[in-house]
Image (cartoon, rainbow, N blue to C red):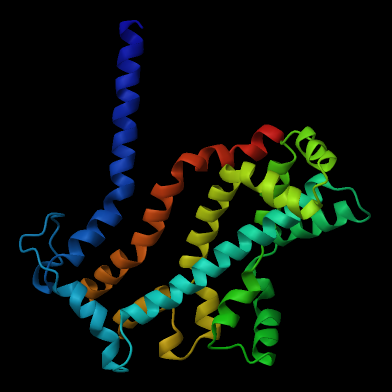
Length: 280
C-alpha cells in the first residue's frame, strides 16, 4: 500500500468516525439529559455535572398520578407482549408462506406472491380506516388482540423468506421425501433450521417495528393501562411545559430492548439482508 492509499484510507476513516459521532449525538444528548437535573438540562455540554437517577425513578412512577395501579412497567409489559407475539407469529406465518410460495408449485402461486408484495406498496394510512372499523366491530379496541392480530403476518416477511428458500438446494427436499418426510416435517426439520440468517433478520426488523409502533396504538388504545411504552411517552409533554428529564429517561428505557436484540442477532443480520440482492 503506497502513501497516497494510506492517506486516503485515514481520511475515509476520519470521515466515517465523524459521521458516526454526528448520528449518535441525539442519543448521547438524550442519555445525558436523563442523568441530570432539570436546572441544567439546557446546558450545551453532553457531560452531566451532577449525575442523578431521579429522572428514571420519577419517570417510572409518573403514571401513578393518573392511576395508582399503573407504572411505566405496565406500559413496558404491554409493548413487550405485543412485540414478542407479533415477532414470533411473523416469523412462523411469513416463513411458512414464503416456503410454500418459493418451493411449491400450485395454481395461483404467483398471484398470492404479488398480492403479498402489493401490501408493501400500500401505506398504513390508506388501510387504517377499514382496519379500525373491523377492530371496533370485533370489540378489540383497548385489547391486545387489537394491537396484535392485524400484524400477525407481513408482505415483507413473505418476500424475504421466499427469496431465501429459493436459494436452498432442492436436493435437501428430495432426500427428505425419499426418507418419507411430510411437507410439514421438511419445513420444520430441514428448511427452518437452515434459515437462521433470514429468521434473525426478520426478527430484528419485525421486533423493532412492533416495539416502535405509535400510530396504530394511538388510534385504538384510549385506556391508560393498555397504552404501549411509545404511546405513554407523550404523557411527559404538556400544553405549556415538557418534562425533558422524565421524557429522556423514558426514551432511554424504550430504546434498550431494540439495542439488545440487534446486538444479539447482528452476526446473522447482514447475510440475511443480502439474500434478496444475490438472488436478484
